[in-house]
Length: 76
Image (cartoon, rainbow, N blue to C red; front, side, top):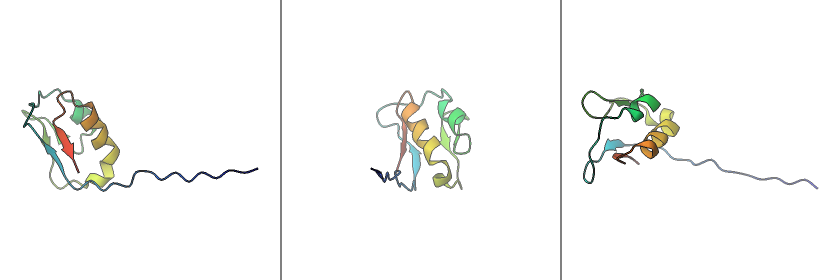
């Protein structure tokens, strides 16, 4: 007997990444920059680099947001 499982990987086009400090502030820990330097930089507090194709770094953006200790990295 043969089984076939068709798993669909999450299709998500990230169109926007931002810093939301409405509840907490960025503490400039550097985790996001370490995980995805192509998208994030920490001059004083986190900034999202302009002109980046977020879809190329989807997994790293998600990991950065989930790893942020103050949960200020948002994406859609």
